[in-house]
Length: 378
Ligand SMILES: O=C(O)CCC(=O)C(=O)O
Image (cartoon, rainbow, N blue to C red; front, side, top):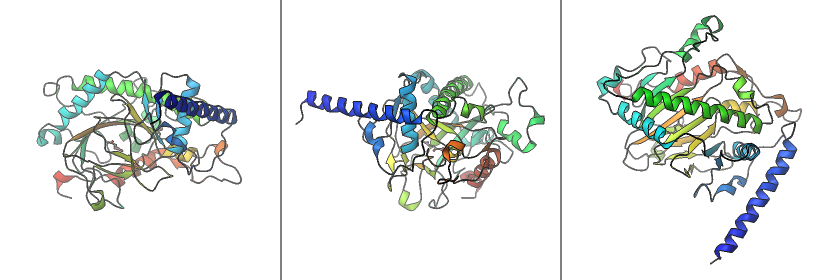
């Protein structure tokens, strides 16, 4: 058995060499982004101890900014996922929003159906059970989940007027749908409080990720001045998943936007397939108040595959309900995303054509939408 002091010494050596690697990487990155080929090894496993058995990096936001950015850069290149601690959102805020999810999604079905958006493509209010199927290639049944969605509204200062926005994009700023306050007292306040705090955290993280790309801190925010972000309360049915039969909580997919910040009820089940792995790896949550962060497709496109939007899915392993709350940060619908000049060269031309964000989001939303179990299509 190794003595504790020897073990501590080994860990210190590992940390020092890690810090040395990060310093030289940062020096290389100064002023430009180094072209790296897709990472094919498991160097990200350096954080195995901190994140439990699986190794998705844990980033403590109470560190110095330079250390945060270096750790995030490494996570973005290797995993496309990391968890954050020390983010400033308190446990009570999480408890209240998880309680709100339980409250609204446990209402009788006829009440929930009254809270469903009428217009096609409008992602607001109740999303029926089986209302989405994220992986057409392997699923034999839509996702075993239902949800409740909230978006951003047109800015009150009129800075995004109807004149600036084609009609078809107005759905990104559609009115939110709220259950009756008498039926669910405190619901609206719990959701708005969480939305405001997770939005602020998201803004901070987009700054770090921009710096991690070797770009100005405002790079992503400049493309998301009117981000049509989406806050989603999800409830997974208490039915064990059978992935080999194509029956899962949520099918394998990548996220469509910039960053996703996910709070779960801690029951596990989120699995990712990193680009260097043939198998699914479960994301461990190092603390009960951590937030899981992952990159969306726009980051992979901007960075020409240097940063990765990693496929993930939800596997329900116990006969118990699971709640989770993703906050999807999207770029402006009018923005075009194309490979950033520092990420391409003659030897490594852009791998993706420019993409129009609004079209991309609408296309993905409609492709994966299903009418749901309660309307007779499944
Ligand atoms: O519920 C989760 O843990 C993940 C949800 C997710 O990936 C999604 O809704 O896109």
